[in-house]
Length: 370
Figure 1 (cartoon, rainbow, N blue to C red):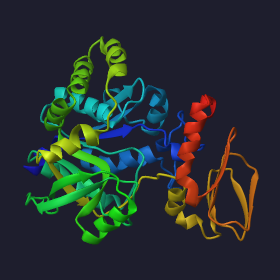
Figure 2 (cartoon, rainbow, N blue to C red):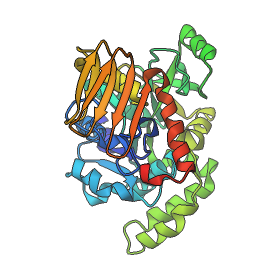
Figure 3 (cartoon, helix red, strand yellow):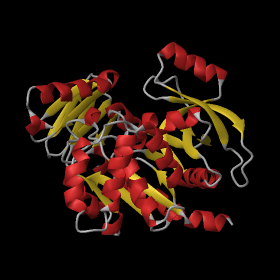
Figure 4 (cartoon, rainbow, N blue to C red):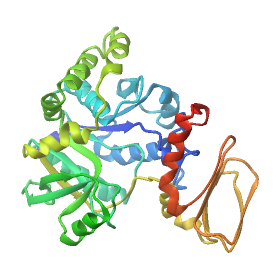
């Protein structure tokens, strides 16, 4: 029986977002999922695809921008055109995931989809895959299932999931109900969540029957639902490009959490499987330092094939795409990103503020640097 359920499973990888906190390494033309940020030899999107293969086989769909088509196919040469969905312009996660759900629903309304962002670092992969299998079995009972991450510190950067009672799903012993989704809290509230227990980080991983996903999308965002269905209905016809170019620009921009997950939780249709694996969304350059500890023996994490670093009583992260020496002397927790047209110098403490720099450059019309 469970084999039949898993044969209905389709992995979906939304590959969007620029990763502006990783500027100037991550750009609109080369977002962070196209980079190897862990010195593993795999880009983030390649690693995401490889994690899903043991569960989904070749049933994996990627949703990305038209501008990234060639780069994504270079990373994933086995990806067939049928499973590559190209957005004319960025919207938000509800449009990307909703379109995948609509296309998969029209192929087979019994499909169970699992959405996993292209830019996350997860290990051990076997533990992740076990959590996905539990999520698929739980979704088959008629639930939208999120995989929640055990918080390691009182983060104010993530939303939280308040867990409920065990559901007793066969083959999914850790599946629980969801009491509510909680917005990003202040630090005091986050500390209270950790002290109380029963709260997990919302990492944006959703596994659900496509029919249930679309049902909640229609109830809460009818205009978005109807627009996506019109695109999906034209997907395998000569009208695809015309319908996409006409409908997509007018679609509402909203996150899948607000459009589907939160209202579905209020209706009692959401479950959670705790993920007991290591997880990082590589949100800034400080994260890159954490993820490349093996290269910190001399105090400095280096990225880039050409970069050369001289360090004297210094620590930090250095990325370079040119063969010139970066010398660091008597400075701790520094971040240096040296590219052909931009040089970033900051500290790990202020790494999150890089996003503000990107916004300022955008406001100034310096799109050539973005």
